[in-house]
Length: 399
Ligand SMILES: *Cc1c(COP(=O)(O)O)cnc(C)c1O
Image (cartoon, rainbow, N blue to C red; front, side):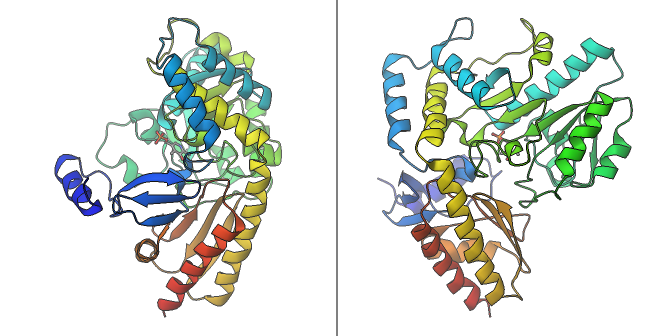
């Protein structure tokens, strides 16, 4: 058995250096806690970047995976896959959507959404109407289409030529979006709350205004709910917070509780544009992943997880607001919905993440100065208080 440090050193030798990794090697988890290779315990407020929605080793998800692994791990989409059909039925019942396409990651789900929007527009209106508008500070993935869609220079730098037909507008600015919607545009792609961009909640009425301008112009509205979906904001999907329905929605991250999965959901009107042979994925909707997805979505709906998310989210925001009151020179703002919460700092966040690690808490920082809290949706107020005590210590030591 290797120590954490041995794993860290070996990883540095044999893996690409494309991640600046936090120096810890977690090997086991239960609920909101993880243990590293040295047996040290950490409170997990990152949850695999909003992936471990039900925490670690949630019994119903583990049971579903065990059962499915014994029955059948993989089956091609040449055939009918019962757990895939079940998960699609669950998602259709819970959303605006009529149909689901499964893939393996968020980027792939957004790729599918971009392809569907362009194909639909091509089928309806012919060529020259393939433009897609996205927001500055957005994040949509790392494939060529999705990094082009991402409104952050640093993600695109060095990878040109990018895909043609994308443009960016400031997030939350309805007038700027309206101005960009000429007759070359087929779709608008937005996160209902920007995650990687710093937990940016749009002004009230923004999503409604976007829906209306898309309707007026026959432009498709795509919501990237890869981070905000699957219970993260206290509703099963964030669009349900304000009742603004998209035409297409993408999911991944928490959808199968930690097993890789992605999904694209859409209204019936778009279905004809994805006929036989238009799109596909070998692993997409794989029996193992979709069985885990069924167990995850059912648990979110049946185990009181959404209510816990709302209550724990309120508690978390209240406790972070206390810290903002106590350290006004260090903490600028607290914002978010449910258990997707950002605390914008006046100082760089990386040293705080390091300090929290040393005190047994996993925290995340995005956009240099935003601590982003996205614990498992089953997190208790006691666990939040334990994290707050550590964060309070760290902030007080900043002087
Ligand atoms: C994480 C994320 C993605 C990319 O998902 P991958 O599974 O890493 O490809 C896309 N959009 C949003 C909003 C995300 O949070």
